[in-house]
Image 1 (cartoon, rainbow, N blue to C red):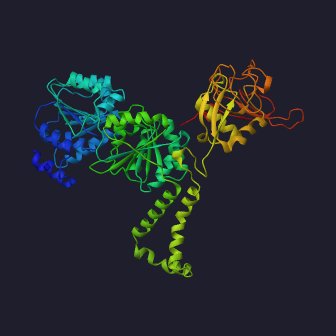
Image 2: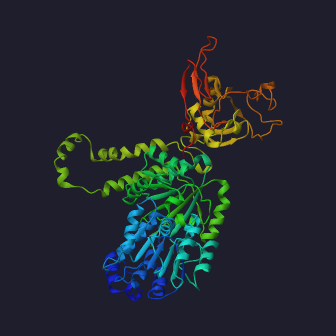
Length: 615
């Protein structure tokens, strides 16, 4: 069936033809005939990227009265980005409808301008729930003339905490309206809305409830947690034409991963809630223009990203809410295209993979990360293809060719090709020639990296948590925090692991006489895990003995009175200083971390933010 057979008016058909649409998607095929010119409530289950905006936008426009300035349709969406996208799409469909006005209402923009747009008269309002409630409270919007309410991505609006706002908005709309609920998943809260605010809704679906799109392949790679970032790089290198979204759980992790990718030369940037609206707009503009290859984002920030041709969705971590996996992967394989969803997991996540398989009704393939040879080969032939397909501007380059020919006259054609190819090939070959198998738990850079475990005499009672201790260790050792893993912070001590090549680096810290809160910082190689609370303890190199006391080479756990507030101490500030002294003429270098005191020593003072993990 074509759009011509769906009963749409001539103005809409002309715009559809301009856009190049011919055949409706399954969800459009089911909803447009049902909703066009009829008063009915509908629950439509469809994945992101299946043409949902046209599925509700075209029926709204087909029945809108452009001679009236009353607001006749309200579309609610969870995020500013999706709000703007829906408005733009509706305006494209209404290209030949004279007198139509669409107001876009969302937070982060001038509410005064939005109030003015509504006051001038608008037939359709597309809004985020929070900003619309603000306008209702200011009596700047009247919803009594609404004939149709659309809840787009209803499950996500509820996940983002808009339940109360939706209740306020829906209570303001007339009883005789039609309510169209579009959702990728159908949790209980969405069912509650359908029962409370809808009358005998018709349920349509382009697949089973919560099911993932059919044209997405799902792959997972299992690695050690410390190798997660290396696995991400390996994937990016193996797919040189990747145009993808990397999903992280937290804003901090999102920024860390993006910063690391940029530092390592990848075309990437971060999108998360700590960015200003202007920064988010700039990042999204770069991504839509494809000047970015990888967008590293949180789930919330990525809501409403509507970008065509996303090739990969990479789950750097699996989402906390398993149903969110459906929304993440819906960012690829849009408009009938195929895509790949990749999950980087550790052993403890294997059970969650089975849970996701059950929800999306799809099987994952367990992938094996490509080795160094495979990555280098892929990059080499990608470069060859780029050289073969490059556009040559004959007129522009003609004047430079004589000098180029002169410079290369002593090289054969084969030599020239080898040198051009080697320019890119050498970089990957140097990095990957000794790369290990990450899937077997090895690290990058030659052979399987063994790990070592360490004991440290600082813990949560000193104000440390896992992230702040990693930063403190990185500061005193100059080892990057990413190389510290399995950090286990106890009350008065901690354990951490790193690659065995850093053993001497950390043991050397003991010779530097570093102090924290007037206590010498001690680090020892550890043999096994120890439970907090004493007992027979954990074997450590350089002497056995119990947990408390000095006998047998153990550490004195006595806490000295006084001292500064230290790292997250009683005043909650890191404070701290590092000083150099000559003690008894020995020339030992002493570094201490605690509250600064005013003496004549050379100091370096740190603010808490310098050690607080920002990602």
